Length: 251
Image 1 (cartoon, rainbow, N blue to C red):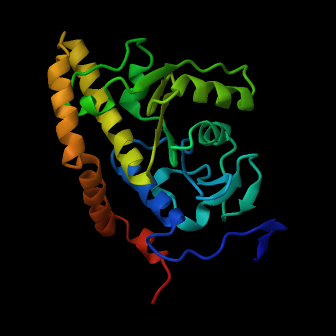
Image 2: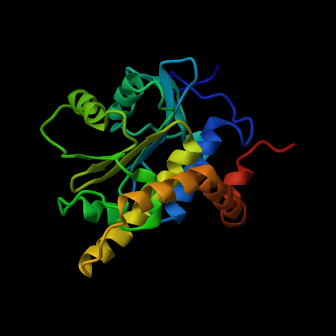
């Protein structure tokens, strides 16, 4: 294996199934749907069979290429180095992967509407039909800037518990899931639902009743809403982001 400045370098990207390419695609989809985080925010994917994950650097989401993604161990040591440094704020990814064997993807963004919602102290509510996908699955986390990163990561994992999303006070959101594809779309949908909630609250809108929420949730999971949305967004990337696909090895 070659090295970069004495550090282990990543192996060449193999194709569209390569986890680094999928991460780059996810970041660009998130950007298209309004979830860019300036140069902050991270997308990571667990490495099967290893105490490690692929993760992104400081950069705008829409500029991510597979070559920028690094493999990092749970101890935050760089195992395979991308062409850009991995973001230093990724301790909580390792904490969540340790605590949740069912989680294969962790996404942190600073989506505008969900970030605004976190300033209100109002819990995430069932104001829009897609919000049913998150029924009883969103927790609230208050950042403590005085806490050391390792302690913060462990606390975030504890507060998250078995749920799929954290709204982080005056900050943004955290999403976890079994796949990169569904987790990415859930981040998109939570931002959309937060936008509807803020608008509904402004006009004294009411929430959906429990039975309706459960009916919507059952239907969206049964008919694969998240998977269909990923495929649709991926098709759009082929037209909008040719530089991403040009990064693949040419046959």
